Length: 412
Image (cartoon, rainbow, N blue to C red; front, side, top):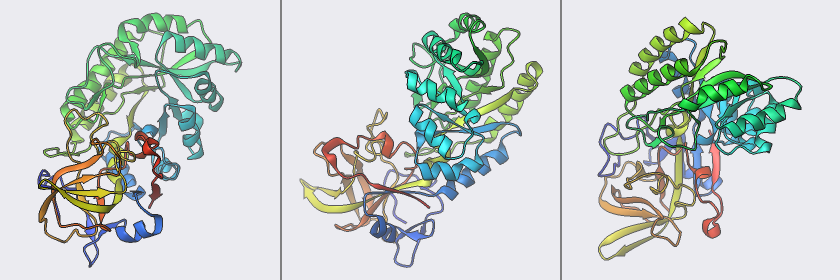
């Protein structure tokens, strides 16, 4: 099996299958057949893989911990419909994502609306659906209350706290310090006092400290500190339905990355449940996960359209690039660019024989999908597969740049 020179053996995606010609099989179907049917570039999502991930996670977590899916990770409508039966709810960040969650079959009451810049349209859509509105500022609280007066009843809100700590070892910090996300913890008591006089009720609290973390101990510590903070700032008389501890669960992308261990997190959550129920016996814990559930279930296929050598370096030029997969190009939050796991999907059984750069079709040096990777010899017509592409792919990319056609997306 071909491997890049940077990838450690323990990291290469497990369970890859090939046919007798050495072609990558995705959900039992040859990559070349999928490309012929749907064209390239092409995103392929294996919903069954995501389902297995969800069920495996549930088997390790304490009973009663609910799983919500963060729609922003991958909002593909067919994928959402496939995921919905395995989930307890979805978390959205716009009226558009809210409609996708509803169409997937998630009840409005099991949807939470987040985001620092909610418009009146977003807020009204959430209230109309009976969803929980995540409050991230005093302004949002009063906007939601103004709209609630037209509903004729108290509407559910959750309070997102900006903690005074950060999730250690996370790929992206979503709280701690000065932040556009959430309400500074020290201001929450004042906000809760204002909320008492408005047509809203506190359905829950949320803290999302960071994302893409592979250190179980760091996640468990952040979850414990999050619950401590919520218990400390919430006055008597408020009994929330849920406490959302966010997510932050990462998946391996790069050399040296190891899969996240769930056992230490599960042990910590069991202890947190006991503490939570000592104060609020009926309040449930919620985990909000995106990348961890779907990231490893997606493959991006792009076809080699040219092969050239420039001053001693070989370049494979493909028909898709950062316009479709910004994350793989290293331009979606990486401080130092590193290669996603990549392979020649049509030559998986061939020995790696050359070091190449894989670049997309755009007129910018940023359009690079892999640098100095050791792969089998590839020619125009071969397919390149980029793994770990199920999250933050197409919808997180600058698809309008240079006006290339959109890739197809299929769910198997």
